[in-house]
Length: 535
Image 1 (spheres, rainbow, N blue to C red):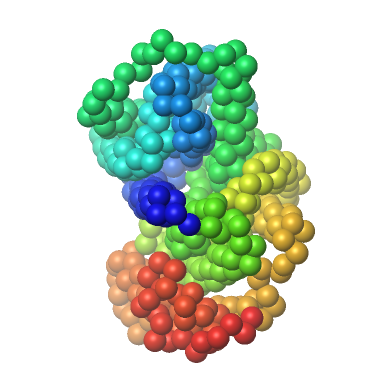
Image 2 (cartoon, helix red, strand yellow; image 1 turned 90 degrees about the vertical axis):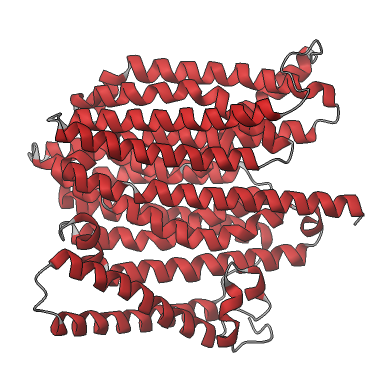
Protein backbone atom coordinates (compact mmCIF):
# COMPACT_ATOMS: atom_id res chain seq x y z
CA UNK A 1 0.00 0.00 0.00
CA UNK A 2 1.37 3.43 -0.98
CA UNK A 3 2.09 6.14 1.58
CA UNK A 4 -0.78 8.26 0.22
CA UNK A 5 -3.21 5.33 0.49
CA UNK A 6 -2.07 4.66 4.05
CA UNK A 7 -2.63 8.31 4.98
CA UNK A 8 -6.10 8.25 3.40
CA UNK A 9 -6.99 5.10 5.36
CA UNK A 10 -5.72 6.65 8.61
CA UNK A 11 -7.79 9.77 7.93
CA UNK A 12 -10.89 7.68 7.19
CA UNK A 13 -10.50 5.60 10.35
CA UNK A 14 -9.85 8.71 12.43
CA UNK A 15 -13.00 10.28 10.98
CA UNK A 16 -15.00 7.14 11.72
CA UNK A 17 -13.73 7.23 15.31
CA UNK A 18 -14.78 10.90 15.71
CA UNK A 19 -18.28 10.12 14.42
CA UNK A 20 -18.50 7.02 16.63
CA UNK A 21 -17.66 9.04 19.75
CA UNK A 22 -20.18 11.74 18.78
CA UNK A 23 -22.84 9.12 18.10
CA UNK A 24 -22.17 7.49 21.48
CA UNK A 25 -22.53 10.82 23.31
CA UNK A 26 -25.72 11.75 21.48
CA UNK A 27 -27.30 8.32 21.98
CA UNK A 28 -26.58 8.38 25.71
CA UNK A 29 -28.07 11.87 25.96
CA UNK A 30 -31.05 10.81 23.86
CA UNK A 31 -31.78 7.88 26.15
CA UNK A 32 -30.95 9.47 29.49
CA UNK A 33 -33.08 12.64 29.33
CA UNK A 34 -36.30 10.61 29.11
CA UNK A 35 -35.81 9.49 32.71
CA UNK A 36 -36.02 12.99 34.28
CA UNK A 37 -38.74 13.82 31.75
CA UNK A 38 -40.84 10.92 33.07
CA UNK A 39 -40.13 12.06 36.62
CA UNK A 40 -41.35 15.57 35.73
CA UNK A 41 -44.43 14.68 33.66
CA UNK A 42 -45.45 11.30 35.11
CA UNK A 43 -46.42 8.14 33.23
CA UNK A 44 -49.18 9.80 31.20
CA UNK A 45 -46.91 12.69 30.25
CA UNK A 46 -44.25 10.15 29.29
CA UNK A 47 -46.78 8.25 27.17
CA UNK A 48 -47.68 11.49 25.34
CA UNK A 49 -44.06 12.24 24.48
CA UNK A 50 -43.22 8.67 23.49
CA UNK A 51 -46.22 8.48 21.15
CA UNK A 52 -44.83 11.26 18.97
CA UNK A 53 -41.09 10.75 19.50
CA UNK A 54 -40.69 8.24 16.62
CA UNK A 55 -41.60 11.02 14.16
CA UNK A 56 -38.74 13.14 15.46
CA UNK A 57 -36.52 10.05 15.51
CA UNK A 58 -37.15 9.60 11.79
CA UNK A 59 -36.04 13.12 10.84
CA UNK A 60 -33.05 12.80 13.18
CA UNK A 61 -31.96 9.58 11.45
CA UNK A 62 -32.49 11.09 7.99
CA UNK A 63 -30.35 14.13 8.81
CA UNK A 64 -27.66 12.23 10.71
CA UNK A 65 -27.16 8.71 9.32
CA UNK A 66 -28.92 8.57 5.96
CA UNK A 67 -28.59 11.45 3.57
CA UNK A 68 -25.28 12.86 4.88
CA UNK A 69 -23.66 9.47 4.21
CA UNK A 70 -25.12 9.34 0.68
CA UNK A 71 -24.04 12.93 -0.10
CA UNK A 72 -20.56 12.32 1.31
CA UNK A 73 -20.12 9.30 -0.96
CA UNK A 74 -21.09 11.36 -4.01
CA UNK A 75 -18.59 14.08 -3.11
CA UNK A 76 -15.80 11.68 -2.13
CA UNK A 77 -16.17 9.66 -5.35
CA UNK A 78 -16.36 12.76 -7.54
CA UNK A 79 -13.09 13.10 -9.47
CA UNK A 80 -13.70 16.63 -10.73
CA UNK A 81 -13.54 19.30 -8.04
CA UNK A 82 -15.60 21.78 -10.06
CA UNK A 83 -18.64 19.49 -9.79
CA UNK A 84 -18.65 19.42 -5.97
CA UNK A 85 -20.86 22.47 -5.56
CA UNK A 86 -23.27 21.16 -8.17
CA UNK A 87 -23.65 17.96 -6.12
CA UNK A 88 -24.29 20.13 -3.05
CA UNK A 89 -26.95 22.15 -4.88
CA UNK A 90 -28.68 19.08 -6.30
CA UNK A 91 -28.69 17.44 -2.87
CA UNK A 92 -30.13 20.57 -1.28
CA UNK A 93 -32.92 20.82 -3.88
CA UNK A 94 -33.78 17.14 -3.54
CA UNK A 95 -33.89 17.26 0.25
CA UNK A 96 -35.89 20.49 0.20
CA UNK A 97 -38.52 18.60 -1.77
CA UNK A 98 -38.40 15.63 0.65
CA UNK A 99 -38.51 17.87 3.71
CA UNK A 100 -41.36 20.04 2.43
CA UNK A 101 -43.50 17.05 1.42
CA UNK A 102 -42.89 15.41 4.81
CA UNK A 103 -43.75 18.66 6.60
CA UNK A 104 -47.01 19.04 4.68
CA UNK A 105 -47.97 15.41 5.27
CA UNK A 106 -47.44 15.69 9.03
CA UNK A 107 -48.76 19.21 9.56
CA UNK A 108 -51.96 18.85 7.56
CA UNK A 109 -52.39 15.16 8.38
CA UNK A 110 -51.70 15.57 12.10
CA UNK A 111 -55.33 15.17 13.11
CA UNK A 112 -55.70 11.98 11.06
CA UNK A 113 -52.44 10.53 12.41
CA UNK A 114 -53.39 11.40 16.01
CA UNK A 115 -56.72 9.61 15.52
CA UNK A 116 -54.84 6.56 14.20
CA UNK A 117 -52.76 6.63 17.38
CA UNK A 118 -55.97 6.62 19.42
CA UNK A 119 -55.59 10.10 20.94
CA UNK A 120 -56.71 13.19 18.99
CA UNK A 121 -55.06 15.47 21.60
CA UNK A 122 -51.69 14.51 20.08
CA UNK A 123 -52.44 16.72 17.06
CA UNK A 124 -50.55 19.74 18.46
CA UNK A 125 -47.45 17.67 19.18
CA UNK A 126 -47.41 16.15 15.69
CA UNK A 127 -47.72 19.59 14.10
CA UNK A 128 -44.89 20.88 16.27
CA UNK A 129 -42.52 18.08 15.30
CA UNK A 130 -43.41 18.50 11.60
CA UNK A 131 -41.35 21.72 11.47
CA UNK A 132 -38.19 19.68 12.11
CA UNK A 133 -38.44 18.33 8.57
CA UNK A 134 -37.94 21.85 7.18
CA UNK A 135 -34.39 21.81 8.62
CA UNK A 136 -33.59 18.51 6.88
CA UNK A 137 -32.08 19.95 3.64
CA UNK A 138 -29.81 22.36 5.51
CA UNK A 139 -28.34 20.00 8.12
CA UNK A 140 -28.10 16.94 5.83
CA UNK A 141 -26.44 18.76 2.94
CA UNK A 142 -23.86 20.52 5.09
CA UNK A 143 -23.02 17.36 7.04
CA UNK A 144 -22.73 15.39 3.82
CA UNK A 145 -20.43 17.99 2.28
CA UNK A 146 -18.04 18.05 5.24
CA UNK A 147 -18.01 14.25 5.53
CA UNK A 148 -17.29 13.97 1.81
CA UNK A 149 -14.23 16.17 2.36
CA UNK A 150 -13.09 13.83 5.19
CA UNK A 151 -13.81 16.54 7.77
CA UNK A 152 -15.93 14.76 10.37
CA UNK A 153 -15.58 17.39 13.09
CA UNK A 154 -18.46 19.66 11.95
CA UNK A 155 -20.85 16.71 11.87
CA UNK A 156 -19.69 15.45 15.28
CA UNK A 157 -19.87 18.88 16.95
CA UNK A 158 -23.28 19.61 15.40
CA UNK A 159 -24.67 16.29 16.65
CA UNK A 160 -23.49 16.89 20.21
CA UNK A 161 -24.71 20.51 20.12
CA UNK A 162 -28.11 19.42 18.80
CA UNK A 163 -28.66 16.85 21.53
CA UNK A 164 -27.30 19.06 24.32
CA UNK A 165 -29.55 22.01 23.44
CA UNK A 166 -32.47 19.67 22.77
CA UNK A 167 -32.23 17.87 26.12
CA UNK A 168 -31.83 21.12 28.06
CA UNK A 169 -34.78 22.73 26.25
CA UNK A 170 -37.05 19.69 26.65
CA UNK A 171 -36.51 19.43 30.40
CA UNK A 172 -36.73 23.21 30.93
CA UNK A 173 -39.88 23.75 28.87
CA UNK A 174 -41.70 20.75 30.29
CA UNK A 175 -40.89 21.72 33.89
CA UNK A 176 -41.81 25.40 33.46
CA UNK A 177 -45.05 24.61 31.61
CA UNK A 178 -46.22 22.04 34.15
CA UNK A 179 -45.31 24.30 37.08
CA UNK A 180 -47.31 27.14 35.48
CA UNK A 181 -50.43 24.98 35.26
CA UNK A 182 -50.27 23.82 31.64
CA UNK A 183 -51.61 20.39 30.68
CA UNK A 184 -49.34 17.41 30.04
CA UNK A 185 -50.21 17.71 26.34
CA UNK A 186 -49.04 21.33 26.26
CA UNK A 187 -45.88 20.29 28.12
CA UNK A 188 -45.37 17.59 25.48
CA UNK A 189 -45.70 20.19 22.72
CA UNK A 190 -43.13 22.31 24.57
CA UNK A 191 -40.79 19.32 24.65
CA UNK A 192 -41.20 18.85 20.90
CA UNK A 193 -40.43 22.55 20.40
CA UNK A 194 -37.26 21.93 22.39
CA UNK A 195 -36.31 19.29 19.83
CA UNK A 196 -36.78 21.89 17.10
CA UNK A 197 -34.41 24.24 18.92
CA UNK A 198 -31.85 21.44 18.95
CA UNK A 199 -32.08 21.29 15.17
CA UNK A 200 -31.42 25.03 14.93
CA UNK A 201 -28.38 24.62 17.20
CA UNK A 202 -26.97 21.97 14.84
CA UNK A 203 -27.61 24.24 11.85
CA UNK A 204 -25.89 27.17 13.57
CA UNK A 205 -22.77 25.05 14.20
CA UNK A 206 -22.67 23.79 10.61
CA UNK A 207 -23.08 27.29 9.14
CA UNK A 208 -20.27 28.52 11.40
CA UNK A 209 -17.95 25.82 10.03
CA UNK A 210 -19.07 26.61 6.47
CA UNK A 211 -18.30 30.33 6.85
CA UNK A 212 -14.83 29.52 8.21
CA UNK A 213 -13.87 28.01 4.87
CA UNK A 214 -12.01 30.18 2.41
CA UNK A 215 -12.98 30.61 -1.24
CA UNK A 216 -15.96 28.26 -1.06
CA UNK A 217 -19.18 29.33 -2.72
CA UNK A 218 -22.29 27.33 -3.49
CA UNK A 219 -22.71 29.27 -6.72
CA UNK A 220 -21.38 27.58 -9.84
CA UNK A 221 -21.81 27.98 -13.58
CA UNK A 222 -20.88 24.35 -14.19
CA UNK A 223 -23.65 21.78 -14.31
CA UNK A 224 -24.09 18.07 -14.93
CA UNK A 225 -25.68 16.57 -17.98
CA UNK A 226 -29.29 15.47 -17.50
CA UNK A 227 -28.07 11.86 -17.35
CA UNK A 228 -25.60 12.65 -14.57
CA UNK A 229 -28.21 14.69 -12.71
CA UNK A 230 -30.62 11.76 -12.78
CA UNK A 231 -27.85 9.47 -11.52
CA UNK A 232 -27.15 11.74 -8.55
CA UNK A 233 -30.84 12.10 -7.66
CA UNK A 234 -31.42 8.35 -8.00
CA UNK A 235 -28.41 7.66 -5.79
CA UNK A 236 -29.72 10.06 -3.14
CA UNK A 237 -33.19 8.54 -3.23
CA UNK A 238 -32.09 4.90 -3.09
CA UNK A 239 -28.79 4.96 -1.18
CA UNK A 240 -29.90 7.55 1.37
CA UNK A 241 -33.18 5.78 2.04
CA UNK A 242 -31.67 2.29 2.35
CA UNK A 243 -29.08 3.50 4.87
CA UNK A 244 -31.79 5.32 6.83
CA UNK A 245 -34.32 2.52 6.88
CA UNK A 246 -31.82 -0.03 8.14
CA UNK A 247 -30.60 2.26 10.93
CA UNK A 248 -34.10 3.24 12.10
CA UNK A 249 -35.09 -0.23 13.25
CA UNK A 250 -35.57 0.75 16.92
CA UNK A 251 -37.63 3.79 15.90
CA UNK A 252 -39.85 1.80 13.55
CA UNK A 253 -40.62 -0.85 16.16
CA UNK A 254 -41.49 1.90 18.63
CA UNK A 255 -43.65 3.59 15.97
CA UNK A 256 -45.65 0.39 15.51
CA UNK A 257 -46.46 0.56 19.23
CA UNK A 258 -47.44 4.23 18.84
CA UNK A 259 -49.89 3.38 16.07
CA UNK A 260 -51.38 0.20 17.49
CA UNK A 261 -50.86 -0.36 21.23
CA UNK A 262 -53.09 2.37 22.71
CA UNK A 263 -55.94 1.57 20.31
CA UNK A 264 -55.71 -2.13 21.13
CA UNK A 265 -55.76 -1.42 24.87
CA UNK A 266 -58.75 0.91 24.48
CA UNK A 267 -60.54 -1.76 22.45
CA UNK A 268 -60.29 -3.97 25.54
CA UNK A 269 -62.30 -1.37 27.47
CA UNK A 270 -59.44 0.17 29.45
CA UNK A 271 -60.25 3.80 28.57
CA UNK A 272 -57.91 6.38 30.15
CA UNK A 273 -56.11 3.62 32.04
CA UNK A 274 -54.66 2.60 28.67
CA UNK A 275 -52.58 5.80 28.56
CA UNK A 276 -51.11 5.04 31.98
CA UNK A 277 -50.28 1.47 30.94
CA UNK A 278 -48.66 2.68 27.72
CA UNK A 279 -46.58 5.20 29.69
CA UNK A 280 -45.38 2.48 32.07
CA UNK A 281 -44.62 0.19 29.12
CA UNK A 282 -42.61 3.00 27.49
CA UNK A 283 -40.21 2.97 30.44
CA UNK A 284 -38.57 0.09 28.63
CA UNK A 285 -37.49 2.26 25.66
CA UNK A 286 -34.68 4.21 27.38
CA UNK A 287 -33.54 1.00 29.10
CA UNK A 288 -33.31 -0.80 25.76
CA UNK A 289 -31.58 2.18 24.17
CA UNK A 290 -29.03 2.59 26.96
CA UNK A 291 -28.26 -1.14 27.05
CA UNK A 292 -27.95 -1.30 23.28
CA UNK A 293 -25.68 1.76 23.19
CA UNK A 294 -23.34 0.12 25.71
CA UNK A 295 -23.24 -3.15 23.76
CA UNK A 296 -22.89 -1.70 20.26
CA UNK A 297 -20.34 0.95 21.27
CA UNK A 298 -17.85 -1.90 21.65
CA UNK A 299 -18.84 -4.01 18.64
CA UNK A 300 -19.54 -1.25 16.10
CA UNK A 301 -16.14 0.33 16.75
CA UNK A 302 -14.66 -2.44 14.56
CA UNK A 303 -17.16 -2.24 11.68
CA UNK A 304 -15.70 0.75 9.74
CA UNK A 305 -12.55 -1.28 9.10
CA UNK A 306 -14.59 -3.81 7.08
CA UNK A 307 -14.98 -1.34 4.21
CA UNK A 308 -11.26 -0.54 3.92
CA UNK A 309 -9.55 -1.79 0.77
CA UNK A 310 -6.85 -3.58 2.76
CA UNK A 311 -9.38 -5.77 4.57
CA UNK A 312 -11.85 -6.15 1.68
CA UNK A 313 -9.07 -7.80 -0.36
CA UNK A 314 -8.37 -10.38 2.36
CA UNK A 315 -11.29 -12.76 2.96
CA UNK A 316 -9.63 -14.38 5.98
CA UNK A 317 -9.21 -10.97 7.60
CA UNK A 318 -12.87 -10.17 6.90
CA UNK A 319 -13.97 -13.37 8.62
CA UNK A 320 -11.79 -12.62 11.65
CA UNK A 321 -13.18 -9.08 11.96
CA UNK A 322 -16.78 -10.28 11.64
CA UNK A 323 -16.18 -13.09 14.13
CA UNK A 324 -14.74 -10.70 16.71
CA UNK A 325 -17.43 -8.05 16.11
CA UNK A 326 -20.30 -10.49 16.60
CA UNK A 327 -18.59 -12.10 19.58
CA UNK A 328 -18.34 -8.71 21.29
CA UNK A 329 -22.00 -7.91 20.52
CA UNK A 330 -23.11 -11.29 21.87
CA UNK A 331 -20.99 -11.15 25.05
CA UNK A 332 -21.81 -7.55 25.97
CA UNK A 333 -25.45 -7.82 24.84
CA UNK A 334 -26.08 -10.98 26.87
CA UNK A 335 -24.37 -9.50 29.90
CA UNK A 336 -26.44 -6.30 29.67
CA UNK A 337 -29.69 -8.26 29.26
CA UNK A 338 -29.10 -10.69 32.12
CA UNK A 339 -27.73 -7.99 34.41
CA UNK A 340 -30.72 -5.71 33.84
CA UNK A 341 -33.19 -8.57 34.30
CA UNK A 342 -31.65 -9.32 37.70
CA UNK A 343 -31.54 -5.67 38.75
CA UNK A 344 -34.80 -4.56 37.14
CA UNK A 345 -36.66 -3.82 40.39
CA UNK A 346 -34.12 -1.45 41.99
CA UNK A 347 -33.38 0.05 38.57
CA UNK A 348 -37.07 0.71 37.94
CA UNK A 349 -37.53 2.38 41.33
CA UNK A 350 -34.28 4.35 40.98
CA UNK A 351 -35.17 5.76 37.55
CA UNK A 352 -38.98 5.94 37.55
CA UNK A 353 -39.91 6.28 41.27
CA UNK A 354 -41.87 3.00 41.60
CA UNK A 355 -41.81 -0.67 40.56
CA UNK A 356 -44.74 -0.57 38.10
CA UNK A 357 -44.42 -2.64 34.93
CA UNK A 358 -41.92 -5.14 36.28
CA UNK A 359 -43.01 -7.99 33.99
CA UNK A 360 -42.99 -5.83 30.86
CA UNK A 361 -39.59 -4.33 31.67
CA UNK A 362 -38.10 -7.75 32.41
CA UNK A 363 -39.20 -9.02 28.99
CA UNK A 364 -38.00 -5.86 27.24
CA UNK A 365 -34.64 -6.16 29.01
CA UNK A 366 -34.12 -9.48 27.25
CA UNK A 367 -34.43 -7.58 23.95
CA UNK A 368 -31.09 -5.82 24.52
CA UNK A 369 -29.15 -8.91 23.40
CA UNK A 370 -31.07 -9.08 20.13
CA UNK A 371 -31.16 -5.34 19.42
CA UNK A 372 -27.38 -5.35 19.86
CA UNK A 373 -26.96 -8.27 17.46
CA UNK A 374 -29.48 -6.82 14.98
CA UNK A 375 -27.76 -3.42 14.78
CA UNK A 376 -24.33 -5.05 14.58
CA UNK A 377 -25.45 -7.37 11.77
CA UNK A 378 -26.97 -4.43 9.89
CA UNK A 379 -23.67 -2.54 10.11
CA UNK A 380 -21.67 -5.62 9.04
CA UNK A 381 -23.89 -6.31 6.02
CA UNK A 382 -23.75 -2.66 4.96
CA UNK A 383 -19.97 -2.67 5.39
CA UNK A 384 -19.76 -5.71 3.11
CA UNK A 385 -21.90 -3.98 0.48
CA UNK A 386 -25.22 -5.75 1.16
CA UNK A 387 -27.34 -2.61 1.62
CA UNK A 388 -30.73 -3.95 0.52
CA UNK A 389 -31.07 -7.06 2.69
CA UNK A 390 -30.98 -5.16 6.02
CA UNK A 391 -33.86 -3.03 4.69
CA UNK A 392 -35.78 -6.22 3.89
CA UNK A 393 -35.07 -7.53 7.40
CA UNK A 394 -36.36 -4.28 8.94
CA UNK A 395 -39.51 -4.46 6.79
CA UNK A 396 -40.08 -8.06 7.91
CA UNK A 397 -39.58 -6.92 11.51
CA UNK A 398 -42.18 -4.14 11.17
CA UNK A 399 -44.77 -6.52 9.75
CA UNK A 400 -43.92 -9.13 12.38
CA UNK A 401 -44.24 -6.62 15.24
CA UNK A 402 -47.60 -5.36 13.94
CA UNK A 403 -49.03 -8.86 13.58
CA UNK A 404 -47.74 -9.99 16.98
CA UNK A 405 -49.25 -6.90 18.61
CA UNK A 406 -52.61 -7.68 17.04
CA UNK A 407 -52.41 -11.25 18.32
CA UNK A 408 -50.84 -10.85 21.78
CA UNK A 409 -52.06 -7.47 23.12
CA UNK A 410 -55.77 -8.47 23.31
CA UNK A 411 -54.75 -11.44 25.48
CA UNK A 412 -51.94 -10.02 27.65
CA UNK A 413 -52.12 -6.24 27.13
CA UNK A 414 -48.71 -4.54 27.53
CA UNK A 415 -47.06 -7.85 28.50
CA UNK A 416 -48.13 -9.11 25.08
CA UNK A 417 -46.62 -6.00 23.44
CA UNK A 418 -43.34 -6.65 25.28
CA UNK A 419 -43.28 -10.27 24.06
CA UNK A 420 -44.05 -9.01 20.53
CA UNK A 421 -41.04 -6.68 20.69
CA UNK A 422 -38.73 -9.43 21.95
CA UNK A 423 -39.87 -11.96 19.33
CA UNK A 424 -39.51 -9.34 16.58
CA UNK A 425 -35.87 -8.64 17.43
CA UNK A 426 -35.16 -12.37 17.71
CA UNK A 427 -36.66 -12.86 14.24
CA UNK A 428 -34.64 -10.03 12.67
CA UNK A 429 -31.43 -11.31 14.27
CA UNK A 430 -31.92 -14.86 13.00
CA UNK A 431 -32.89 -13.65 9.52
CA UNK A 432 -29.78 -11.51 9.10
CA UNK A 433 -27.46 -14.06 10.68
CA UNK A 434 -28.77 -16.72 8.29
CA UNK A 435 -28.11 -14.39 5.33
CA UNK A 436 -24.57 -13.64 6.52
CA UNK A 437 -23.90 -17.35 7.09
CA UNK A 438 -25.14 -18.18 3.58
CA UNK A 439 -22.87 -15.56 2.05
CA UNK A 440 -19.74 -16.25 4.10
CA UNK A 441 -20.21 -20.00 4.83
CA UNK A 442 -18.98 -19.56 8.37
CA UNK A 443 -20.63 -19.92 11.81
CA UNK A 444 -19.35 -16.66 13.28
CA UNK A 445 -20.42 -17.49 16.84
CA UNK A 446 -19.25 -21.01 17.71
CA UNK A 447 -21.06 -23.36 20.10
CA UNK A 448 -18.20 -23.22 22.59
CA UNK A 449 -18.39 -19.41 22.69
CA UNK A 450 -22.15 -19.57 23.27
CA UNK A 451 -21.79 -22.16 26.06
CA UNK A 452 -19.01 -20.27 27.85
CA UNK A 453 -20.82 -16.92 27.55
CA UNK A 454 -24.13 -18.33 28.80
CA UNK A 455 -22.30 -19.95 31.73
CA UNK A 456 -20.64 -16.61 32.56
CA UNK A 457 -24.01 -14.82 32.44
CA UNK A 458 -25.57 -17.54 34.62
CA UNK A 459 -22.85 -17.14 37.25
CA UNK A 460 -23.32 -13.37 37.20
CA UNK A 461 -27.07 -13.88 37.69
CA UNK A 462 -26.46 -16.19 40.66
CA UNK A 463 -24.13 -13.60 42.18
CA UNK A 464 -26.63 -10.75 41.65
CA UNK A 465 -29.55 -12.70 43.10
CA UNK A 466 -27.48 -13.42 46.20
CA UNK A 467 -26.32 -9.80 46.34
CA UNK A 468 -29.93 -8.53 46.22
CA UNK A 469 -31.04 -10.95 48.94
CA UNK A 470 -28.17 -10.01 51.26
CA UNK A 471 -28.58 -6.25 50.80
CA UNK A 472 -32.35 -6.49 51.29
CA UNK A 473 -31.82 -8.36 54.56
CA UNK A 474 -29.05 -6.14 55.88
CA UNK A 475 -30.64 -2.81 54.99
CA UNK A 476 -34.33 -3.55 55.50
CA UNK A 477 -34.44 -0.65 57.98
CA UNK A 478 -33.60 1.91 55.24
CA UNK A 479 -36.67 4.14 54.99
CA UNK A 480 -35.92 5.98 51.72
CA UNK A 481 -36.81 3.30 49.16
CA UNK A 482 -35.69 5.21 46.06
CA UNK A 483 -32.28 6.13 47.48
CA UNK A 484 -31.70 2.56 48.66
CA UNK A 485 -32.72 1.22 45.23
CA UNK A 486 -30.31 3.65 43.55
CA UNK A 487 -27.38 2.48 45.67
CA UNK A 488 -28.41 -1.15 45.23
CA UNK A 489 -28.75 -0.84 41.44
CA UNK A 490 -25.55 1.12 40.78
CA UNK A 491 -23.43 -1.07 43.07
CA UNK A 492 -25.05 -4.16 41.54
CA UNK A 493 -24.11 -3.05 38.01
CA UNK A 494 -20.53 -2.45 39.12
CA UNK A 495 -20.09 -5.72 41.05
CA UNK A 496 -22.03 -7.84 38.56
CA UNK A 497 -20.01 -6.38 35.69
CA UNK A 498 -16.74 -7.24 37.41
CA UNK A 499 -17.85 -10.83 38.06
CA UNK A 500 -19.03 -11.25 34.45
CA UNK A 501 -15.86 -9.79 32.91
CA UNK A 502 -13.53 -11.90 35.05
CA UNK A 503 -15.37 -15.13 34.18
CA UNK A 504 -15.49 -14.17 30.48
CA UNK A 505 -11.74 -13.58 30.49
CA UNK A 506 -10.98 -16.76 32.45
CA UNK A 507 -13.08 -18.79 30.00
CA UNK A 508 -10.85 -17.57 27.16
CA UNK A 509 -13.62 -16.11 25.03
CA UNK A 510 -11.21 -13.44 23.76
CA UNK A 511 -7.60 -13.81 22.67
CA UNK A 512 -4.95 -11.59 24.19
CA UNK A 513 -4.23 -9.87 20.87
CA UNK A 514 -7.97 -9.32 20.27
CA UNK A 515 -8.28 -7.20 23.39
CA UNK A 516 -5.91 -4.62 21.90
CA UNK A 517 -8.51 -3.65 19.26
CA UNK A 518 -11.51 -3.64 21.64
CA UNK A 519 -12.23 -0.32 23.37
CA UNK A 520 -10.77 -0.51 26.92
CA UNK A 521 -9.76 -4.12 26.22
CA UNK A 522 -6.17 -3.49 27.30
CA UNK A 523 -7.23 -3.24 30.96
CA UNK A 524 -8.56 -6.83 30.95
CA UNK A 525 -5.47 -8.51 29.49
CA UNK A 526 -4.21 -9.65 32.90
CA UNK A 527 -7.28 -11.90 33.28
CA UNK A 528 -6.68 -13.62 29.92
CA UNK A 529 -6.23 -17.38 29.76
CA UNK A 530 -6.51 -18.16 26.03
CA UNK A 531 -3.27 -17.08 24.33
CA UNK A 532 -3.72 -18.93 21.07
CA UNK A 533 -6.75 -19.26 18.86
CA UNK A 534 -8.63 -22.38 19.92
CA UNK A 535 -12.02 -21.49 18.52
